[in-house]
Length: 119
Image 1 (tube, rainbow, N blue to C red):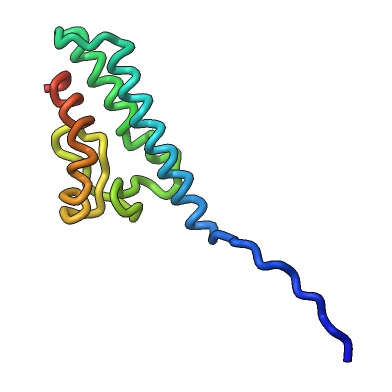
Image 2 (cartoon, rainbow, N blue to C red):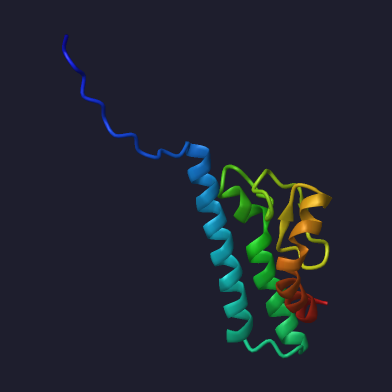
């Protein structure tokens, strides 16, 4: 009887998991970039800085930007398809109230920063 050589098993992620991991990294980098731009543009609360902040914020949350990703907006907590934005800063997307509440401790600091300049 001939013995068969078995090949090593590699950890292969399904395509959806790869995409989700990629989008999560992009989301983190976008938040980091947004924080850096707040500092870079010296947002001082003046009317001019408020207008600039709103334009920057819109560029990160526009439906056009989301359309570039065929999957659309993803929930910041679980990664599922999201249909709701944070009503305060409009930068974070959620699939529902439960995920929004669970994510709030992590989102609060950035949300506060955007709210100070954009309100």
